[in-house]
Length: 113
Length: 113
Image (cartoon, rainbow over all chains, first blue to last red):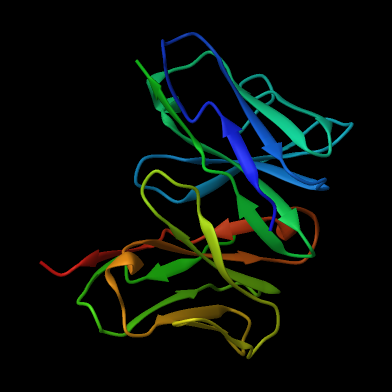
């Protein structure tokens, strides 16, 4: 399975600022995803990061708030903009290998004060 | 929208006991996946199921893809302390946005006091 790393592993940010999270994969993958996991909750898909084109966002998530870059097949970034306390969550990068198997990075724990 | 109903929400285990959890839905899926998440980590893929009726084992873990394609269960035999964590079921439909994984709310395994 792919080895996925995320930076930073955690951060504490002030309201109104932005945080950019990096995701690096050790092999080329076609499909990369970003998820949010609110405290004590399940995983919610934010968007699919498409290489060379705009990300595909799920209902309730917009590009202005969660801009995503995917410059190549091994790297993606997610920015969480104009932070509010409600954005305090774990943000997870995920990749699909094979037809259906999907793997997750270790997550970035964001606390907004 | 599609939803996965995972139960039980939480359970306590005593070392050596067998554990069972399941996921049901009103929708049909073509893939079921089971993940385990330890505190401070991303979810780790345990078992992937691709065919209705399929029964797959991974060590002490056994999972089945329901015949109706609407459910799946996970069994853990002879539990050990390191089985503690949160187990998530996930399912994937057919193509487009339905090809994205959706997750159950998780089953939290704790050690009996």
